[in-house]
Length: 86
Image (cartoon, helix red, strand yellow):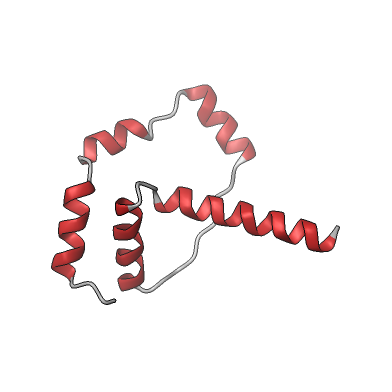
């Protein structure tokens, strides 16, 4: 199913939070930020803008962030690979 830009914006607005709430939610105390820098890396990829918008809309409907969805997907895939190769 193809979503129009207007439908996607409506879905995002209905489920959305304000920019300030998002900023506060992602603030890290200094000790946590140091741990993150030492132990975590960021993986990125490019996707078509339309796919990204649709992903964000579905994530909002499902009450999951795209970050969390990707993180869970990667962990599940790695678990499957470990079972296959170990």
